[in-house]
Image 1 (cartoon, rainbow, N blue to C red):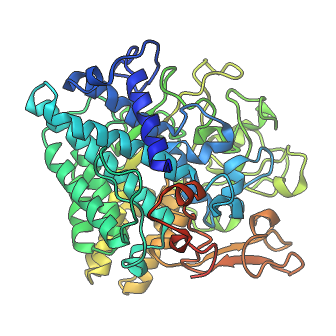
Image 2 (cartoon, rainbow, N blue to C red; image 1 turned 45 degrees about the vertical axis):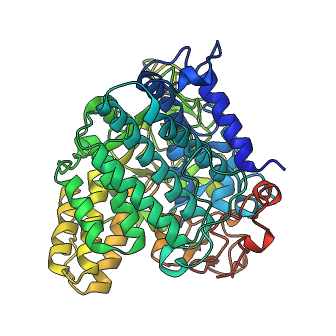
Length: 552
């Protein structure tokens, strides 16, 4: 019986065989003439080109440019929408549908194994893991310098650790309550058997830490040529995230601080208002890790920039009316806008409810789409953080080659604040928090040193600073064991959530004066079920290993 692993492994080997003839140092896997497996795995030069295909899976997703229906699964950049849409701060119209709307609605098909989406992260991450394992197993016998082998091994181990982190975050409850529960399947060699059992959550985190710590050591002298590649700084930042989820605050602080010390020039107001789309080209010093899409390395109109409904009013209200193809999906909840005080430049808004112009939206973050034909949507807030105008000098439907940050110094600073607060060092934690707030011109700086209140202020600051970057929303709700609450549109809350964003949540009653819905903390409706194909074809696991669909 062929397991899902075997299927993925065969596909991985096929990609390795077919991906090299046109490989350059770009992140591309174009193919023409097949090359033998022995040749592919014989030298560090060839293996480095193979590594590009592994990066392709984690940065572009399963099928590269792919279908817009799968935008939330277009690799790690897609997960920046996936995690945050299953939170309280972002909402989606029903204009286009696909995975952004499905994630926003917390629809059953997002997580149920009987649907088509529960396997997306599973298959994508295991494809990258399997390819990384093939390279790791080939390295000892490959020709090339030891330094080259160390660079390759370090990047492959880092990729494997990151992939397992995303798998364990999505296929089981959070570490604090699930250490002894069923985790995912740990494959650390290309020669692993087709059928393997699950490891515990603790064993998965042990492997993640082992991979990342060894990668950090191996990459200590690695000087990357592209910001999308993983170096020791990115690995430290990823370790900080893992330790943060685990509640290992001493190590989270150490790793985050080691990165922040190098990336502590926080972005300026002008950089914040730049649209977040040219950070790498512009040399923003806060960016630790990011991906730049090009004509060779792109996911077409699957980028986050194509989904935020923030094209200038003059372009109109249609998908093809602006300089890039836009699905006019994503807006922000009114309660999110209320988190910002009048001094905070991240929260400037235009309150006009009629006749909003291009000039009105130029120097604000939030504004109303007053030309939209739907009266409810006109009351919502557009958000200018991720805003892109294409690469064709403003021409209609120009190319879509934005640049997306995947890790920034401000996140490391907030991890430092959270770590210090959890260790009882509230004065130091407060100083870290207000460092960021002051850089963003917050008028009402946090002053409390009471631990619980301070931690809540840090959590709110993460939402304000990092929305759309994949580390808020469901990501924070699960690790902090917080419930999800959404408040719907009403006469007193006109910019609240759409009714379809609450129909699968508990307690929702559309006729309430202020309708709301919630998911309890750690409810399995946040968590994906194990794909049915894996359960059917892996001979040593069974339906007894399956996650429940709901409940805690």
